[in-house]
Image (cartoon, one colour):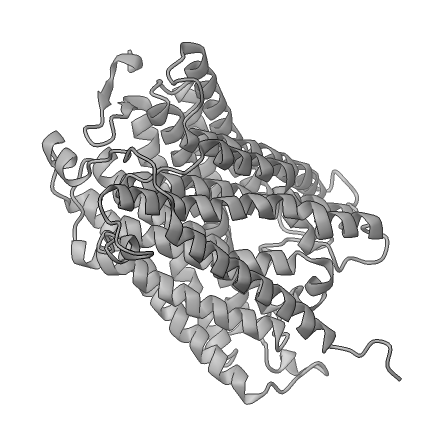
Length: 561
């Protein structure tokens, strides 16, 4: 029986059941494959921005943007998150995976949908729509069918996760409270349910509309429903990323959050308010689409419920690192623990870069852009792209990369190949994404450069052509440099991951125990350094937020003749 096929990880003490372990491996491998495809398709879109439409045609730009978006924002992310859900539900809660056949069915449906999207995007690019396929634009039925296949597969994976969670609860495989990482995965799974249901509500009618069964769809209704899926998927990413942060803090330095109760409350705040972030896509809709009262309340007040949750995590994760390092004996001064941290460990450096870049680039820009007034200047500009380069890429992707450096030896029992390359990979990828995101943020909010437009400078020779000032050329060059560095960092990660799977030396239990020993450090310390860092971040956040509103006030004069 599958239940009897289990082993205990010598480094973590987790129980790894064969069915769950195999599904984690297959989903993780699929995730890396689609990450590679997404990395390759970013090359034409970046070259179009930097070198212009004369070098990379608008048609190729749109095709590349379509395939880059689906592979990076959906396929790479969700395959990895399914692997994380199975790992959390089975290994962390020490219970066998429920309904493994259903889990395999979900995997093959997801894979079929993802492969079909890539096939259609490569063979029939002129027939397909951007990543935001707004009605009344219409794609062929196979496009909508592929999305539905993938979504149904993801729903089956979430059902398996919930069933496994129920089995763990019924068997009392954990103590009085669920481990924090499993609780974070539960938060991501609940958000995934609302996200996938929104996608079904949008894409099922669109599928029948493309077949001619439904005569028409309301464009505003469809756009609102779509963003429950399109942006909601990124909220699932956020919960999964924070879960990976807590796991990496434990795996790298034995760090645990100062207050599990407070961290759980932060996850709960995500459930209450995080999906309101979808509203920023809708704030420039025609009058009447969203009422003024709804806009003021949700974007001015209720959205900050989720912001509070993120601020709690922004303190708790670095505090976990400081606690773990101070309890290891690095107690000198305010930041001695940070200076003597294991920076050569790619899991640790990926974690720190993920937290810092997400906070300073993705998080602050997201809160600002989610405000009704500031959104007027940021909407549909390159700032939107710069924002999610700071969240989904610099934040989440780096966190998943860091976690992979532990899953490879713990699950696949292989020693990392090219360890020197693995040490520099997070820095290469993180620095590149920081430059790319910063350039995009400024190009969008200061110069209004549009997103997803294949001819940014001449607008196809239309009357909208615009001459940008010289700084734009510098920022575009910075985009090119950052994009190149990030691409090299991404390819280096794929090389290390695939190379480890194919050629990594097998690890014995003793080898795993020696190299990857994970032990929560016990004791009480005050994270004094993180207190100071948190205050500095809050000051930066306030200045950035106010600057954007001041900058908005310069766009037009109010109350002057």
